[in-house]
Image (cartoon, rainbow, N blue to C red; front, side, top):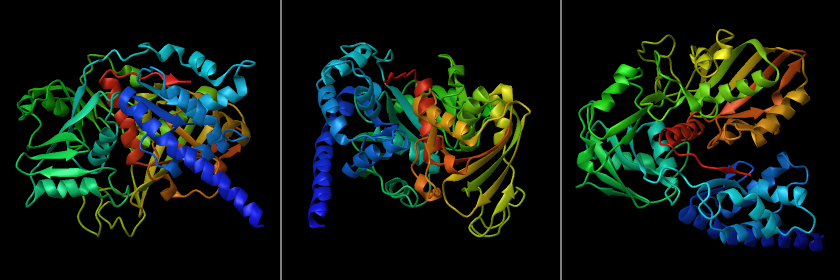
Length: 481
């Protein structure tokens, strides 16, 4: 028994040592070359040794043989010496590909060189050489998570720079209070870095990034050029203005180029779900909406289902964590039922997500209904898709298709997939996907199906917003393999 114990412990120690050696290489590739490494969709940027080993373990969900760190380490060593362009590179898929598809007697170096030929020595470089100034207008739940995501991307390949945050001035030590909310989060944990407050300059220094705090009461009263900010992308997180006319006020401020709303847009404002209809953003598009968290979670799944099986009609029920729009205890609220205590009640309310689907997927217009139940949890929600399909299928066929879409399709950043029978909502806090298919709960009977899609309605949605921001900024990263 002691010998068996030593065998397992020695194996763990060796894998841990390899992971410790890999972390500096992963960080240097990102900082110096703008290469974001992943393992089967799991980002390795700013990960820990344990995170890296868990990412390898996750591969078992897709590959029966799994993936050993002994396979990825030599590939990473070779990649570290290559002159790569900024890109998104799945180290796990590259390693699995070598084990499965390498030509006879082909070395790791030869295989990797062949697979990455399109992004070496200046090939595949970004067309946009100048960075894009980003201003967060509003600094609530989504604003602070966007700040975290933008700051963690600081590096050679980062062409979006958080330059300023616009808020209304609060009482007391306003900047210190806002810095504290960025530093500590009850749901998403502590900020990964350092934050220094410059009271005299009305600014924050966050991981070396100088971020100006601007106080303003209206979006059309700011001269951003006074702060060295020009052609800025304004990300409006307030939700106060949701149509083209209201959001157009931002464009009246000097130094503003484009505006993105982090809420569902009204009227003719384009609602963008990245991965599905982001090609609607043209180079001269000035104002768009990133739709809602629920719309982002369900539209990618609905698209792949409609493409493969057809959707005749259906109903979407969202079991949604409470939001800041509700009351902690019973109090007046203009919305039906939302005045009742969010922490004590399940609250049946409306959602526009089902109708909003048609803005991203016009072929589903009029085919879906929807409702929502707000529940006493602070984050992570669940969409239940009850659909009538265009043809009959099986649970196995549907799950196989969704697994393939999550791994190898153009929607692999939007759709995640889990086969766990034990997963609960808190396990999905921090998910960077728009939605996570709970395959163990899939129900199929003939042409009827019920799908359960989890989503981190704060962090996962914020990651989708970042992708829309990149599109508006003209950033297009090659994704390999």
